[in-house]
Image 1: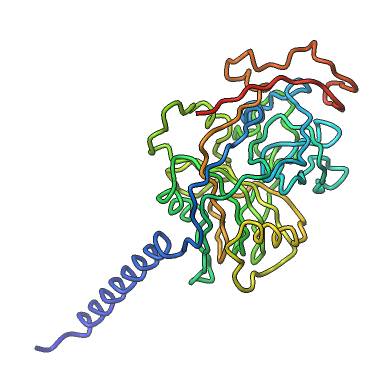
Image 2: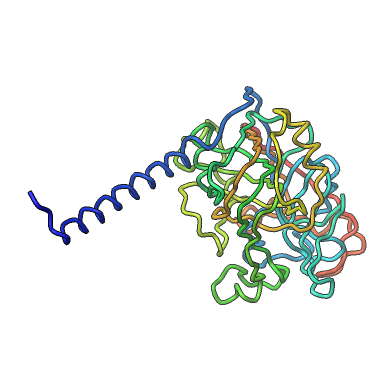
Length: 352
């Protein structure tokens, strides 16, 4: 039987489509199932402390009464919003090994990163020092283009419970990021479409760089443990306007960008060794990390969350007036959008 030239062309085209489909399926299989290897596992669980609420930040509903003085020296990892000296400098916050890194909203200082161990914060959450990981994973990239962070989170969610914290040291193929440039203190939504250009930097992606990231991930489709307070999740998660990663998960992640360009070799399967290596890196910036970012290789520590510790003070926006800081609390050096030097705040704990 003779095959016409047109039919040959059609057969070649079909063959290419089939081959491409197989390649895509294989690529998806690697992305979903083969990129992570677990090198350590334990029954260890952790407490996540939650100070304040992300909602007043998003609504721009912050004044000095919603800020707390936070000593970060006892904090292992945390993220949220923070400022040094004046609340009109409030920007992205990431605490690593007791040191707070803040993306200042001060244009006079060129939005420079600021570092301290005592900050003003209306909202943050994280892990105290002494927290130990439940598992450690290694990602050895087979694709120079990297793997989307949201697909990595999806895979980790298959192996862990409803909510877990993530600490990673990674070589990123590309970092997609976000950061505010104007403090959320002016009584208007910072994520409303009309206000995004006013409140957010237009940040280009960063390619081929090593970074440290911390975040928390929740799978709403997984059953909650008895006594689980879903309202606590509402206090820490939101969808960033620049987020493009398609996922059924909720996540909130910040990143410390370093001067290093690549990861060589494999880190030991020890959280102490991983932390020592991370502390040796030179941090140059801090941003909100978007889950469409792509990771080439990484060591990732997972902290299964058993309980949350809620700190009173800033949840009145959700109708809990008991959380409002009483105006009679001792304060010194406070002026609206000014400096907060000290005051007393009560706390309550939620353990489930």
